[in-house]
Image (cartoon, rainbow, N blue to C red; front, side, top):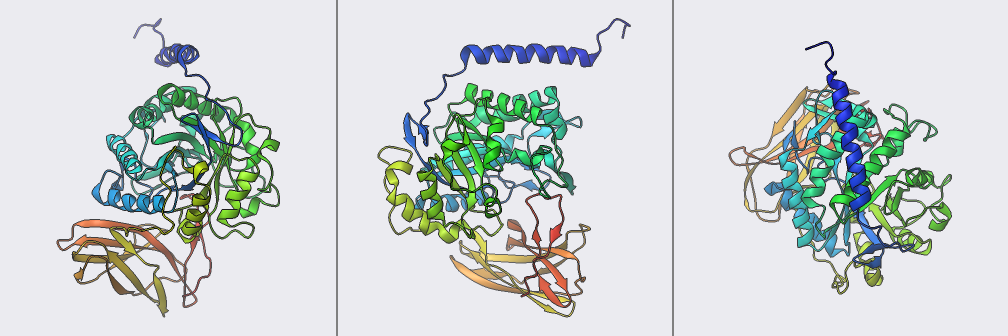
Length: 504
């Protein structure tokens, strides 16, 4: 290479500047007009509605794309049948819109090289998105697709072949950020963004956990954080892409109401925030949306479906209407943290029926019956019963299989720290008729005191072909001769566990 040659990095930078400048000009010339804004409502098909929805954050965390733990996406027969049953039951309870995460912490997609540049998405992800939209259409549901959670950059750790997070460098660098938009987000928008079943793209859920200085106390300790400026740039560019390639709305869900103003001026169509009981002393839920000083409608993106000491699900919906919010999404259908929407699903149905013209999202949509007819999933299990006998743990677990046949069942007890050491117990083949149930009882010998294990369940056909794997049915710990069920402190897979002293 001659001495006067331009360094490759400078060439790359120059090309990127030209590309970004051209994209910006294209947005200015051809971007769609601003949508109609109605205070306290989300406009769909030129009609104002209230989004009374549910968070379906994940069923396994691997519904979209394939990766180090294999492929179990929406397009696979088992996962498709499971979500088909979930969506049927959700729709039967009067829900019209579901919020669902795609990339989340980046454990499977988008694909990145060693420097943090995004190189594309797994082809299976596009097939899974198509399958997801078809399921929504089948059950007359609409989707808000969340692209990322803050775990995309606030975490960075691995479990075997799977890496959680690690996206800080991708978001902080303008060129890498551009590759994320171009090679990660645009393929998703092109695949399903023009479907009438996709109402909105939520660019990030709770990004403020990953910004220095925004969270007082212990909540942000141990999280990888980056400055606000590159995140604002990312939200701006992602919103532009959403508006260029789709008719869908663009939003961000803040981790509290006072943080929504951080995302003003970036082209969002509505703002969103989460609220839980611990916030009430600082940021009470009951305050008018107009007092927040925002220029677009406001949606309550998360609230506890159950377990709140302040409000029931119906009371939150009533409050949201009274205070001028444009919607509210209960947390959650499969969050795994105790706020079980299924426990108050009938309350959701009753409230939706009483407000159907406002929440139907489509003129003439049939009102759901007062009594819901529910579907059973293809594979299911009950809550395990755990008993201690010295250093042995006995597990009693009800297993259900919808389809008639003969199945092999396997229960696995595996340590979390250090990973890899595990014990397993297999039952003998058991015949399960349609809708049938079998109690599985296994005993694990020599369990270490004070070590956290995860209990998992595998369902196989008679030839030991895996049909369904339930990873981490529960966490198990033996302390002073008693069984406890530790719980994760947060959704962050890189953080340790804490015991909750639930003795069985």
